[in-house]
Length: 245
Image (tube, rainbow, N blue to C red; front, side, top):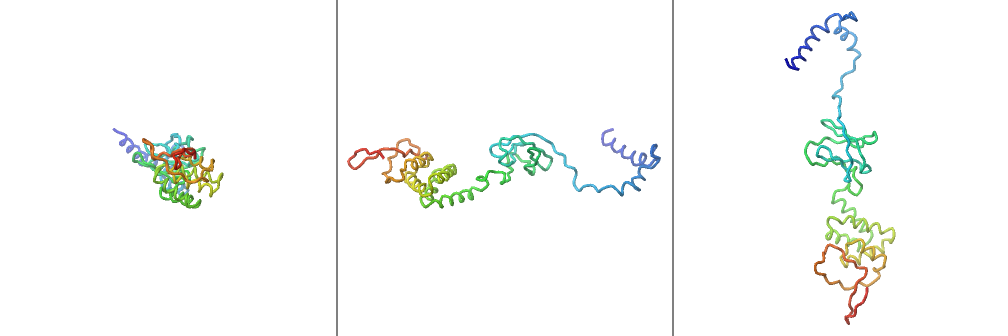
């Protein structure tokens, strides 16, 4: 005798005997009571089965995702570094913080996937690469022509890290204004300087007011992707006399 056989025998006993006899306490037939009184007041069954969720705790990573079952689910950026409660069933993954549901995802059954809601990400990461680039190109174009040209140079020199430099440049606008920043970028563009510290030195020392000196000779072993400190250096006049710029 197995569990299925026991369940079958119990069902037969309930239907054929227990619910059809006169109950010893109520003196009524249970099945007849169900038909005559209880059925008319019972609410209909829900369309879906009651959802039972399992529970665990995860910490939100710096990329605004939690790691769960070898997949990654997004959480609002404000919760980076916080511990959140994960409740899941066969279909859904709910993420709870301080008693509030902050994210809801369809459960992913593959491995190593990112399940991301774009509004969970910081503003600068909500755009596709193309949208993101165009957005900041327009900001540089609004400064002036030299800044726009510098932006395109930066894309070629730092295709993976241009964003950090552009954000730093835009941050300089408040202290120096568009005209000064544009002149500084014109000088940085001439020397192909991509280092933010160099750009700050150009602005602080007002080197953008100086004439553009001849290009420095290449140094053996120098990495062309690294910006060169152009704050101070020596050039030579026509008589080979050193002149400090």
